[in-house]
Length: 398
Image (tube, rainbow, N blue to C red):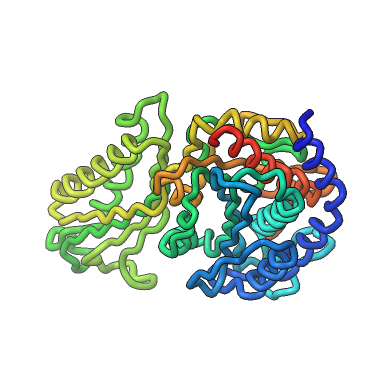
């Protein structure tokens, strides 16, 4: 074990009471996207107290901060999301949310507490840093707008970021493990909006109408064939139409003029993403035409694939081992992450899943559940993983 590894592990133990104190405050004071005012103030106060420079950014919530090491070298960014959800907490957490109708149901408090822990460790080890560290406490991940906001404010510049690391808790893998995936970890996220127009009229006289509901039903069924018949069986994708709107109220004898449908599309490669859009558009237009209707598709790209850079895989794997955690190879998720926005700027990046599952503490519920709870003992592991990622990356990239 190297001297740096020993120091990081020592700080993980010595500072753990502080890590947990931070987590408990964050959990009790959740704030939704772009309203993270108290959280932002809390983070700034902590960073300033450790001698870390809070950079002046034109953002009301979220924090960008910089820690300069002892000499010039690579700049490594560490990112955590800070927003909560409009969910009423029903968990068994002994320090529940103090805000009615809000909770950290996705565990962003664990990410923030882990990054604060890493910041304190790294500030205490400033003499060992041969470069610089940029801390990104990002707002509004839950609405897919926070990363774009910070990027627009040049968070990856001055100094230019050479690599970026992030993490998300996972109730699917046990405490003490960290998922380290080479390649795609989380899927792209696209929104699909269909409009199918026909000719409304009396439901009892269908021959005088052009029924958009029948056309819409056929579009739904045909769309399901894309994954099974157009996407390679070795690849993975999702096409889900989740919302269909036609007619008014409970009217049962009026054929509507229009049907609107909304759904989501997920993929792990850009090639598959392009294929899905092409086939959905073809099906929408041709099937609608076959029924005498006009069909249009609005395809909105929301998030890219969270694809871990192969050049950082060994760095990440060794960072996890260095803090005494167990690296595991996870099954990718079709969930999305706006961490992908940073990767689309051309910055090499790596995203971890931090194991939080513990049946004995009731830490078993999925993200966004009102019963969600993360085992707080994950924070020291998260903080150490962040910190060791910096040291490993600077050494590899210098």
